Amino acid sequence: MSDHHNSVRNYAPFIGMRYSFSRKRNRFTSIVSTVSMLGMVLGVTSLIVVLAVMNGFAGELRGRILALVPHGYIESSEGSITSWRELAKQVESNADVVAISPYITEKAILAHGISQRGAALTAVSPDLESKVSGLNDAMTAGSLESLNGEGFNVILGSTLARMLNVVPGDSIDVTVPRLTVTPLGVFPRSKRLLVTGLFEIGAQADAYQAYVSLHTGQKLIGSKGHVDGLQVKTFALFEAPRVLATLATKLEEGYSVKDWSQTQGSLFRAVKLEKLMVSLLLLSVVAVAAFNIVSTLVMSVAEKRRDIAVLRTMGARAGGIMAIFVAHGLALAAVGISVGALIGVLLALNIADLTAFVERTLGMKLFDPSVYFISELPSDLQWTDVALVVSCSLVLSLLATLYPAWRAASIAPAEVLRYE
Image 1 (cartoon, helix red, strand yellow):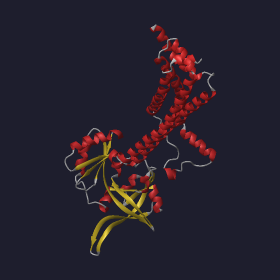
Image 2 (cartoon, rainbow, N blue to C red):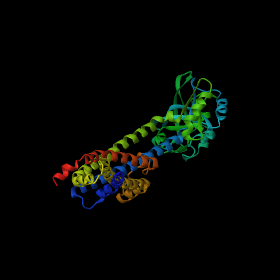
Image 3 (cartoon, one colour):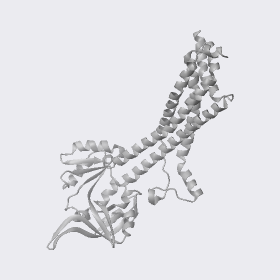
Image 4 (cartoon, one colour):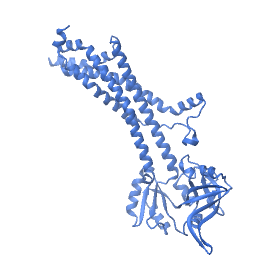
């Protein structure tokens, strides 16, 4: 008898599949099941595409902002570091540290003619800076080396230069909030600098960042031989927090160590949170589709009452009947999820070409680089995201099948057959 039960139970997936894809179904049930499958396709596709685009945005953001931001900083609690060369030697002795560059930074007002702009003025050593940040690669006019030239030179972000209406070769007046005492009174320090280069990373820094040489910076901002801190580059961006935490334990008292995840962390945490919120919102589309599966199965159970009664009289147990309807619901969901995942992956991999095609067809620019800092939709498809979306959708679908399957299993065969 137990073999008989097992064979009936083994039929469960087969009968469930027959119920899902049989042509002899009630027309209305058939429409509802098609709609729930399309809901699954839509939910899964949009989740995969949106997650890929958000990964792409996070990557763009990281690449552009961290092009100028070093992996970490070492600063002194006293405000400035006098013997920075000794400190640099000590830090560079760490095998995980690739390069070190000293810097001085201060807020400044830049003026040219009637145009004035606030800026962050950073003094760096050009040869060392090129090893620590991507500033050298971001130059669009002139070179980083030009800061070492004769006189007092400055490099501006391209947007800042546009706002001030200057090009390389023009002079600008820089005023910093440090005071110079003269017989005539106390004045803020100011200097005329020659613009020798422009850089562009395609992010906010283009509008407020200016660079001068360490020599100029010490004359204008700091005192001779002093620097505000050291910029540190480690062997890998994502290892920087660990490397700098280890470094902090080895340095003597009075030094504070920060890595990029602390200086820029809030921005990347915001992107992460946004990705999570959008995922939850889109998962609700999948949940709605899963609830449609509930209605499809409830209707199927009502339709198949006679079949269930016959199976029960043939010896099928309640568990076997439940398995049939769980298989029935999961078969519908699996088709929707598979098609959705396939379309989602194809769209995510070709989103840049698709947006370019839409732009050509409509004759308009969807992403104006001057507004969005990007010219096309970035996409970074991660297979872990795809696996997560598919598995969450399957779990939601499985939960949706349990109640109707339990209802089917609790049908009493005698009650049904009495009225047949």
